[in-house]
Image (cartoon, rainbow, N blue to C red; front, side):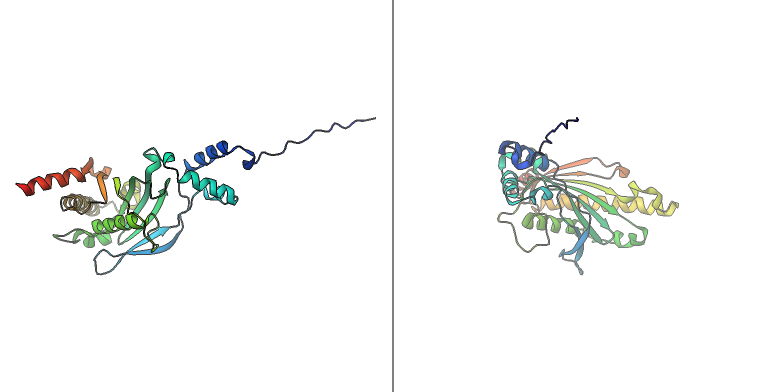
Amino acid sequence: MTSALSCSIPRPCSLMDLPREIRDMVYTNVFSFAGTTSKSLNQQHELNCGAEHPTVVHLSTISFDWLDLMRTNGLVADEMRQIYRLPSYHNTTADQTWSAQLMLNNDEYTLAWTSLPCPSAYVRHLSIDFKINLTLSMFGHWDNDSKEKPGNIFKALLELLNQVAHHGPNIAVSETLRQPIVFETINFNISFVDEEKPWLISSGPESVYILAYGKRRIYSGLIEDIVTACGNHVFKEKVRDISIQGPKSLGSTKIDISIAQSERQNEESDRK
């Protein structure tokens, strides 16, 4: 006679079986990896930079890993929203920083958000990884860009900043934020595509000279435009400090600009 041993299979633990305090810890841990994952470009947006033709920006779809968890059921969605909107949750620089990658390919831009860990009400910092693709065919266009006035790159960056400050990361929407964003810091990390893939660039002495000369002109012009704009109060009520890391190929050092300090110096000069 054989006897069968019966053993009960433990029931899998559900998220909703956990105490609320533990669920909040799970939500917080999920938000700590709040990077965007979609790389599909499904929208084109035009920036009115005062040029003859609007500047085109290709926008990536904003999609978060934690949205899948939020879609589990209504209760989970409500609890996650409560955590996401808690001021105490966004108490570090990383939790208050929006990060994006911006690519300039000749005349068109591509904007992809890489991290949006907090709502617009709590964001304090903006970090932009700005890559420029300078090609020989467009060198004449870049070299003759905006004599004696702000360059097209600066005007596009300024208009992009204005739209992010008033609309949030989804600049294509018509609705504006209740309160425009004033960033404490904006960090630009500027590089050129040929620094990452030099084998794609023509190696002739003429092309090497033109590209190196063109990169220096573009970068120097952009820095000059930003410094001039600070002196003319263009960034007032937009950002307090700007940090710029220049291209490695140009041996550029990091540049820090305090908007408040620049404004105080201008006021003192005006009094004199």
